[in-house]
Image 1: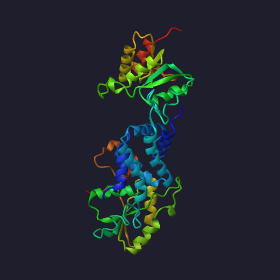
Image 2 (image 1 turned 45 degrees about the vertical axis):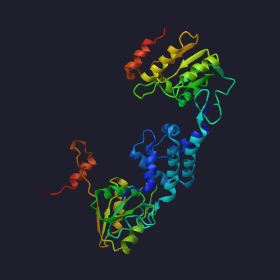
Image 3 (image 1 turned 90 degrees about the vertical axis):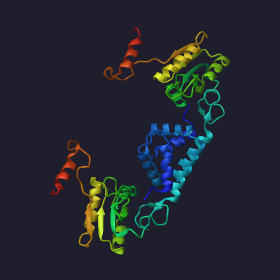
Image 4 (image 1 turned 60 degrees about the horizontal axis):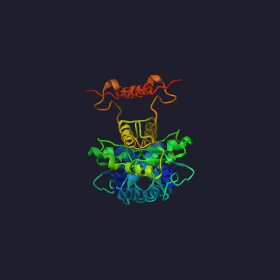
Length: 198
Length: 198
């Protein structure tokens, strides 16, 4: 006796999700059998809708259901100030702050020799054009605090040298509310390096 | 800026899966955007098909796409011998052995005071009727080795007392390939209790 075909097909689909192995996919497939018809129908439609409705904003590269994203089309925001992030979801933490009034640029990833991501795979040229066109004054590089994120930030910073633009990188240091004893050496050395007079 | 509506709806659906929190659901929803159109279409169809095609076998309660499941409709199997399990997926490990030629009965859960699962929620009456109708000679109780599984097995064993049926329970003991030092006290005491002369 083998797994039923329709269950197997669903297990295959769940297995394609990030971090989901065969066992978890199986558990999920069985749980679908327990869901109400409405919930399964909604789930099935939601999958297709995400794929059909959501696309990249042609200006900043973040995701939108409109022609141009909410932030890029907001004339009350400061379009001469750009936070550069790797992925669309990286915009949310900044928006949650509620204090940033500039716009964003989504690179679509980070430079990575190991994963074979080169300059041409990221929307770096789009960023340079945007800077020229919108007379951008400030670029805040907010790629992840990883080797690849750092490489990407430094690469872009290099490109913007001598262009009379205020280029900065998010600060490294101890996370608020953390404890010194739990800080890893890299974070601690960055915190020491970036120490400020009080 | 909030999460896009269509993404939010998909996150909601993923969140309904067992063991998936909001963060994981979000990660999954974003990964769907990266999937090929074909894969998303397949996923969407697979969800609905599982729900539409799969139903319970009216005889044993396992899952099937046919009218009656493969095992119950197999006349070469011994229908007077039944392994009783809690869930359809519990049948697979026995079928993998390749040595069992009897049939199965799926209870649909285990008795549980905490989760409010009572006798009427399990297909225990169906089992009794099946035993009478098919002149069943042997019942092997294979509910999980947990308190609830044990309670369920004991309850059924009690019902079958004095009915001239060979009722047994899977053996408890040390798992093969394990190490004594890692055995929990409950397993070890069961292994000691069930010791066999050699």
